[in-house]
Length: 373
Ligand SMILES: *Cc1c(COP(=O)(O)O)cnc(C)c1O
Image (cartoon, rainbow, N blue to C red; front, side):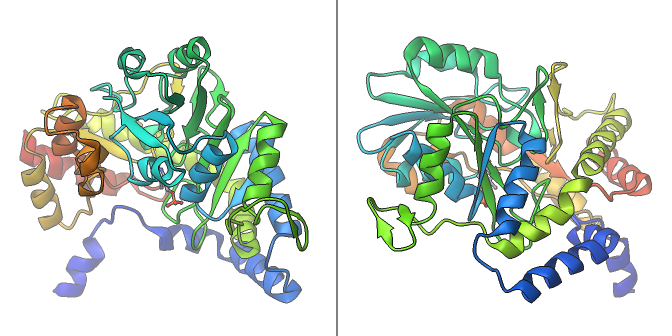
């Protein structure tokens, strides 16, 4: 009985399903690195950095230890630190705000659009102060933020823009790739991301060679040569083993992205007319559906109902950053960013990964409809 129930369960993501489809390529990549014993930097890392330009469409890429390291390095390379403010969204993974704080700056949280859940460009300008140095939009769930408006505001106020593209590999905004639109952009290869490694990994991309050179130096102890350092940096390198795994996965990213988009279209079709809010993809965006997120005021009951039915769900994210205990000293109270707070109580992510089957999608949507009507 128990094993039958387990077999029926539909998980939120299924990394084993993906590994099964590409096992020979992954195993060969791992064996290559182990045989070479070239574990730090070297050709696997530079090779993957070059290959990744086909995803970001930016001129330069620097492999780093994680998405969080990418954000931290991008801020440092832009010279952002103590006394500076960076405008960002509170409706994101904690690392977005954390990187700003670890760089020594203060995150200034601005509310989001209620349909895309991305930073609301209408609200940015009133948050700008003489200390503001940058805007950090997040391309949440795989859909690019409103970049034209954001870049225009940044230009008028002489601010840097750093994209948090951790969820947006191969996403596009008006034909431009996430990762190519701003001063620097940051990707994560956390295992469950659209392109994920088998541990931690990240990438900084950009078109400004001076900034990229700063990132490259800071990721590796501020090194000028093997044992000569003219400043302090960080131990933020991408492992060669992870680079090799990512290089083996990269040729599949386009097909995986199209699978995600087609699953989202099927979800939309099956949930149409039901009493649940489906994702709002802007017509000028290529949404890559890192998460398929629906919205209902009865979210907690729906989550319990789906869990009961053996369907894996996750809340991205239950507590916006401005209400996190770690940010209490910033002084935002409940009600200060009402759209983010409402979304945090109402969103729920349904199973989404490339190998999901139509039968599974039908089971998920039937269970959702049985609950919401
Ligand atoms: C995953 C993620 C990060 C952090 O990436 P790590 O590789 O886990 O450090 C940062 N921002 C967003 C929006 C993310 O989803």
